[in-house]
Image (cartoon, rainbow, N blue to C red; front, side, top):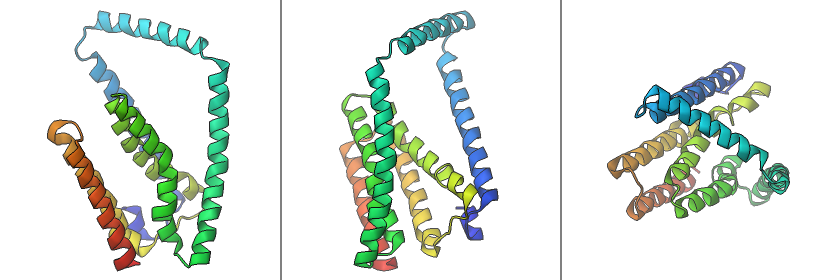
Length: 212
């Protein structure tokens, strides 16, 4: 949001965002290591890490070739699907006279977030709550710093005025709201989910009918 005040996001902003993401990722890994070893002495920690490395190595060696093939197929499908989604979305927007910003904020944003929604829902159903929340927060951080940073290295990313005065503050508000809901009892309840859903509906209504 800081760089948005200066107009288009260019190469300098892109480099800064990529560096910030690298620092964030390093700090995250370091914090995780410190947390995992805080309740153990150095000898136990070293022994455990060696065991984990040995187990990890055996798991990597035993990965079925079919799983690797599915990963490659899935990645290729993701690339093709994203390309089709962007061109189809912009084409439909032109036919219906819908601004590109609206298409990006809703149609394309929802379309590209469906895989993330499936992963989050599946993780929650399996009781992997850390994975569920981490997927959302990590994806948002990556999308902002890398999803904008990498393209901005190639060409300037234009900033719409409405995005600066409404969309960006709304995103920050939703992020803070999510953190407050989580902090209350370290989990998201159905009522919390209804609050988040209602907030998104309110955002969509205001964005479309007020700002246009």
